[in-house]
Amino acid sequence: MQRTAGKVIVPFFISHGGCPHSCLFCDQRRISGSTGELPSPEEIREKIRLYLDSSARESVEVAFYGGSFTMLPLHRQRGLLAPLQPLLDSGRLSAIRLSTRPDAIDPVTIALLRELRVTLVELGVQSMDDEVLAASGRGHNAAHTVAAFSMLTAAGIAVGGQLMPGLPGDTPSGALRSLRALLKLNPACLRIYPTVVVEGTELARLYSSGDYSPLSLDAAVSLGARLLHTALGAAVPVIRMGLQATDLLSGPRGVVAGPYHPAFRQLVESELCYDLLLKLLHQRVGEVTVGAHPSWLSTVIGQNGATRNRLKAQGVRLEKVLPDPGSSLHELAVTCGGITRKGNIVTDLQYCEAEGRHV
Image (cartoon, rainbow, N blue to C red):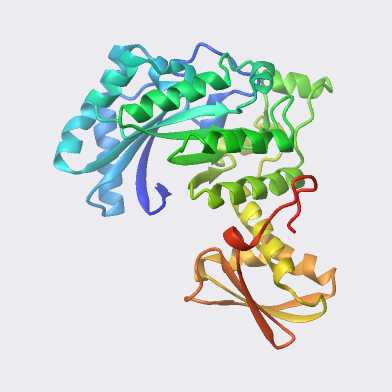
């Protein structure tokens, strides 16, 4: 069951549905773990009923992931959205979201989305650099993204954006420029998926021939920390970082290279915590106690005690990480040498543009 910011989302995957393109990186079947067959109205209603019953919620949201929803024939789009209308009327369904390409938005499409009460459209932006988009075989450019945001926003439909740092020709500074350009369009939410090499894609062939080098996991975490920090500073929620783990992705014919990790977001958030701890430490020796929001204790410690080990290498012993219900989600309180200092990841961290470390 998917939960986003406390909401229960009923997912339907339409892998490659409607999309005429074959981007270098794409294999939606492995990425989503779905064959992409369109569900029938009966299957849609039954799945929603099961989610309502199992979650004990009065209402849920529906999301159509994968493919390019608005490139499906109009009658198929209507066939997926029409069964949801009575559920919206009854209050059992609170929102509908779907994903599509920036160049798959036009007045006819928008009229249908408004008629059938789509709440949010997520656009597969991937990059705001036209050269990166061309090198990846996307078939659209940044101007399409700007136009799609404008049309959807004018129609009263919320718009989210998906970015893929690490595509061919991309750089960390280029990924940051893409994010900043996207933030200027006032997205309702963001997803950040560092590029991974999936078996059977053109990108896998380029990787095998030595013509493409993916980001390492460490580099992707470092870049992800800067991207997340920038989005948090703009008060735009990042609802996912890294691909969701599936059996196909984790299997022997899934991801062959690149920064795939089933808990990628936690790695990124732990990196931000580590950077804030370094900033707050007024002396790099002795024992340290950290207070944090109760839900962030494991994030502060890091996976397999990574933060504790990194601090130890600098002569600092992380003695305790204690729950502090009075702390906000991004706030840490560091006690070292009898002195306590507080800081917030969003407001108290700044990053050097050239080096990518905090200052």
